[in-house]
Image 1 (tube, rainbow, N blue to C red):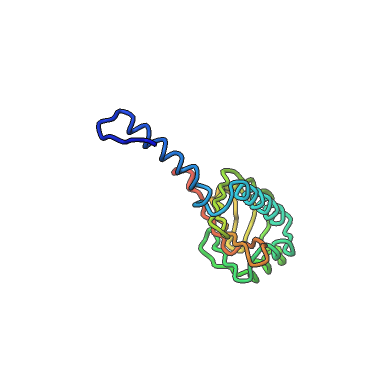
Image 2: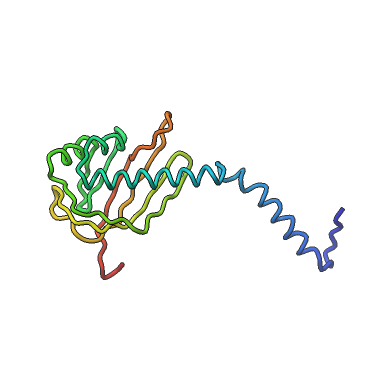
Length: 165
């Protein structure tokens, strides 16, 4: 058994070792899910983000429709609100078209059954608000429903001011 004396030079080392041991034991319990599961969920979200990009490039309203939650709300770079129905109607009508969407700096953060994705996008296209050309940052919020299916509940995009990026 360890004996701790205030004047012992080994007290700090022993307390540090005990703290590291307790951290190693407690970390998996506090994280909410095993590391491998979090890793797999991040990859799943990455794959869905890639599928979203592909569907947007090809104006595939059917695929986008399966990805958006019924109560989805999007905010365009101009501040326009769009429901799921409005977003799909715009895609079907061809008033939103993309020549390119190049994604970089993607970060996926998991919070239980919610994933927040932030990315940078270099785009060339048009929307009902006008030209969509240049650099943007966007956020997708994905929520995993009762059946285990991830859906986008929120989207917001902001144009990057190149002078301040």
